[in-house]
Image (cartoon, rainbow, N blue to C red; front, top):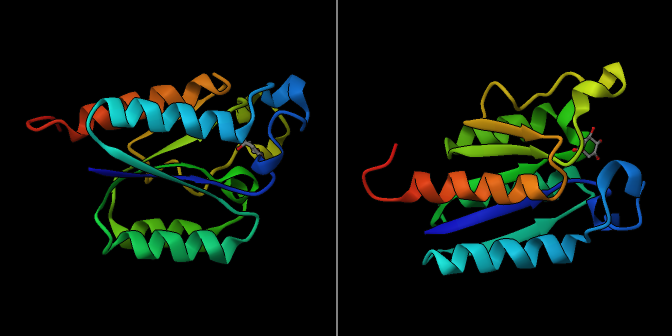
Length: 148
Ligand code: DQA
């Protein structure tokens, strides 16, 4: 099946952006590891990072008809602001896992609310880049025939 990985604003700076908070792994390294993990399980994986809300909304809309079976998304700052991206995910009806490198609940109060968590099948935060691997593990189990 096709798995879609979406990364929100400023995640293109991973590796150099506040490494004490977000770690040293670059987005390219994270995406490459996810692709290897998905392909080893017989699936395909596409990643997209954008700083623009409408680009992410349009990619989610397109996922309705392009064979995407599961979405992993780190909405980054849009987590706390974007009703539009939330509505796009709700419209697709596709299962998704929400991922954060840091633990937003241990940070500023404005990061404590997510527009996505109540729609997500699972939320992973605070594990750094490893959180993406856990999220994909879950997606791969979800996509196995006979699994819920
Ligand atoms: C983040 C947490 C958000 O609060 C922040 O705006 C980000 C990254 C994370 O992965 O920890 O950009 O989603």
